[in-house]
Length: 162
Image (cartoon, rainbow, N blue to C red):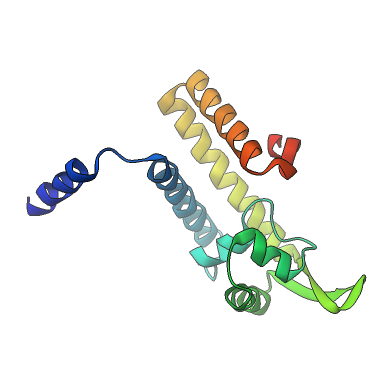
């Protein structure tokens, strides 16, 4: 009972959740579902931190330094995760044909198989939410999120529509 009281006291003191929390909570649920499905399908060596690297639109053919910038993480932290993913057989780092001093990330067939499981898990969750919210309201939510993402990341343009 004390937990409920202190939780509501915190909410009363800071007010209702702001947009960051309202976006984070569904994202956390999606990531949890993705990991559950991955583990069920034999990709039990993946952890949440790996999903950060593999998240849409994926690291295929990117330089690690560019990916670190896009993910807003240090090059050292990203290189650690890339090393793990490479050791586990999800990616390879190959010489960059345009600059032999640099490397490019290449997804392996294992990573592509994991991506199919991830898309299946997220599609399943979208269907559940569409049932819970109603098809029309869920479509509106999706449209608004697409618009917001295009405002935040104009370079993605119509790529978000897939």
